Length: 177
Image 1 (spheres, rainbow, N blue to C red):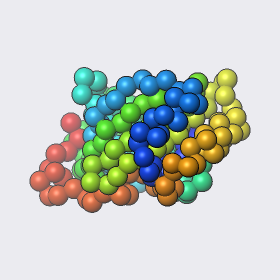
Image 2: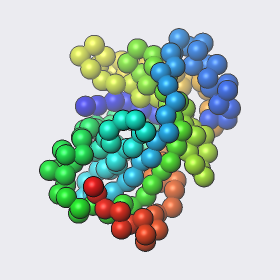
Image 3: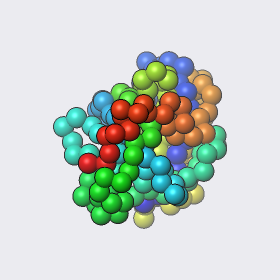
Image 4: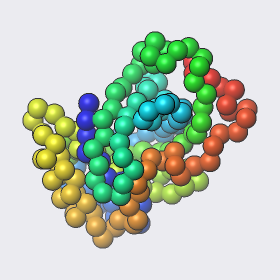
């Protein structure tokens, strides 16, 4: 799968919520999430835990740039991740804890994230599909960036894992389930 994404600090979450409503996005929910990152030879791999949902593994590749960027990703279940990466071989590298507010606008996911010990962020993810090609997704993300410009802080080039400390030794012992 593929999407076009852009991430930035957000100055005011309430203003971001109002702007989401003004552009026609619908709130889908608020979720506590724990993303555990694992080092892999190529790309990024994280295991996402959301209360009440099965764990989800996300393998993705994308450049670290402050501009809107294309991301290729694969979603895996625990079982699929075990088959692909082996059982018990992955060691946790970094852990990101956040509250995520999800807003939907056509094929765009707008994330309002409160990342523990880091700050507040907004992310636009336009999903590429048969209905929405790559160029259309780039245009949609650019348009949203312009619509939200007054409340955006600094753009973020990397993943949240780049903003947190490595896990401690006891946490490293928690290997892939």
